[in-house]
Length: 410
View 1 (cartoon, rainbow, N blue to C red):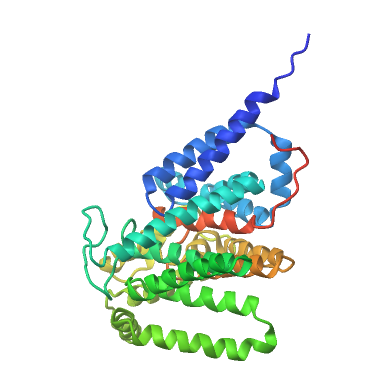
View 2 (cartoon, helix red, strand yellow):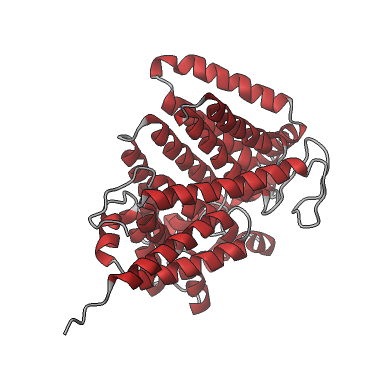
């Protein structure tokens, strides 16, 4: 009697998992609730599909798999020596489970058709966000995050301006990448127009300083990656001109930059400003890392330990949720091991991109620059809205180069 399980159910569940992943990439820039539902469906069908040998091969070929899974292993191990409550540790396990979901998504994204569909879904959602941001100059929909009409003010529509700034920065480099690859002139210029509109959206229609910085750094990295070294000097000169024009024509960017300088100069006064808080959190976090430099304080321990060293109850309330810096967050809770593993994610991804074709390498490295900026200015993998973007965008860019599967796709 043949008791073998037919392959057909596995193929159906695998296909459903991939379509749910496509839905996830569409939902990420627009709605957190939709992204959570799509993620749950992806996970369910991914588990039901099985195909563990195929999945294992994809994980072995994924350059960031080891540091990501190692980092999540530290999150689990950190529960053994943390003084946090069970509720806090569970909360952290759920938050940082995205480290595992990145790997799960990558095992589906190794299929070129799924990878292309997920890129299209993300790009469509980002274009919808871009379009509504410009429409918001004249139109005031009730569901928009902002209700500011006119040029030179914040036009965030679906999420907060930090999340939207990161999405627009990736859309910009995606447009540059696609324009570089296009062989038909009108397509090339269409993609480059999208890139320019995303750049202007972040520099002229947003109040997010993280978005300003991510956009500038990503553009710099992309240009240096595609331009031969002998032409770096004129390329840098052109970027300086673009940056100068952007600053000169954006009153909001000027105001936010001046405010940043003022807050930085006043950070020692104890003012609860955006930059002042980050400088204070940096100081206190470094103190905590110095106390336990190897293993850190454990999963969920940041919250109580930060308040232990905070100088006032006001500062405790301001920073007990997270330190606005993902590097510090991992450093406090998991010491040098956590920091090294998080840095290894960047290093391994960047190293893998060295052998890629120039446009793909430029896109990968530009995204890593966006992730680095987001991780230095906010807790990129902790905050719900931002972490979905940063986590799954990482899965998308590190699988840009399709990997060969041992089993034929169904």
